[in-house]
Length: 187
Image (tube, rainbow, N blue to C red; front, top):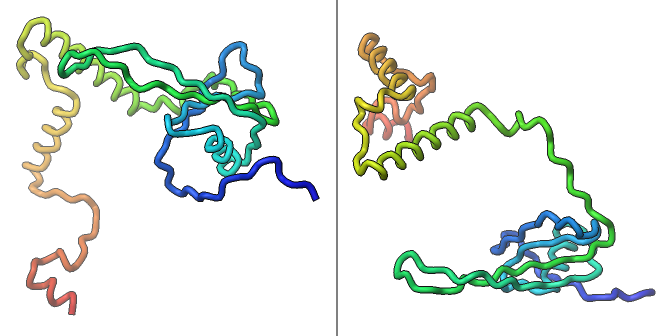
């Protein structure tokens, strides 16, 4: 009976407190190598056990790199400091991995709500830049009514005419009348 080449970890992790990012390969990287951005506390055995137990991917070898980042100036005190380094690990896989092709039709991801939110963000950025240049915020009359304000105004006018609002939900009986009836319902 052949023995295992290495001893695997037995620690079970159900809610991990670390994040591992699978990085897109460089142009000259072979398909049987994969790169990951890992926490600084991760070691080679951790990534090997993680890939084996979480994804059932056996690993032949692991290389670890620490990349120092450029010194930066803190925003609060304007002191120069060096951010913590970025740790990447390159693992050699038994079987090559090919990244899927980029989909040509992005309609499933670009919903109308996402498009509307993007347009609103662009308008907000434009308004903020204008306020920074001029030094004052535009008045409500200068900006005009937005579509959401117009919709709220129409709903308010309808409520004033009809005098009733319903959300088509049945109310729980213990909340229907008040505190006195709630005690009767509990009995």
